[in-house]
Image (cartoon, rainbow, N blue to C red):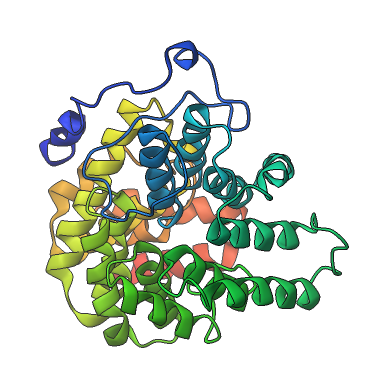
Length: 366
């Protein structure tokens, strides 16, 4: 049974209402094959005005961006596709859906969405037209597309730079410019993208995407103190998103801020388990869940909060897989039999790791 500190989350968003079109409530969405999304309260502060006559399209597009910037690809795609149910001609929902599907590993569906969006190019607003044209270049779907690689990056850069010269406060243009600079990579990109993320934060210090990327960048550079303000900014921007609560741990563990690691990692898992129940999502379908649980486990182990750590076993998504984090917890809590079982799980795939862990266990017992 999940302990009270996890079970208490089951009432989160219980009053959320189904806001999907009446004729779509029982139909799976075409690209994601999921049920339509719903507007969640207090998820994220970020708002980006788009050209649509539908308030719900605007709301779902904002939600799609919130999830996109938190690497929650499935929910991002679900939100963007639900936005298109309310306005099939929304340029930004097309672009967002294509990005989310691509990140989610559904490239063919992503390409279909961008191909469909091409029909909207001529009637799009100037800033949205630039974002669409850059996406078409990225996919090689523009007129006379350049070869994949640097040529496409250069062409997309020209489009976005021209747009920024006129719309220098457009946050999506700045984020796209940063993405182009690092060849559309996540997890912090590289030093080439960092100045653009920082420029974006001058416009909006709480932009979730820029803050999230800079956490990863400074973590990779082994400069956690420089990344800490962005960890705070990301959490403040997205208090209702599990990953924003989790990300603090990436730097807090390196800075000795264990109290924040434990409390915020707990909140992340609380939000996530509630989300699984309310949206009927299996933990195995949530690619972030295992990492979030293991991070919380490591923090609780460090703090000696073994009772709470033990409760995580009820929701552990990787019970059949070997885990160093679980071995460390079992060893620290002096469950030597459990530690032995966990270490031996590595024998089939990583014999050296198994031998190392078993040696540590032997030393702990003698």
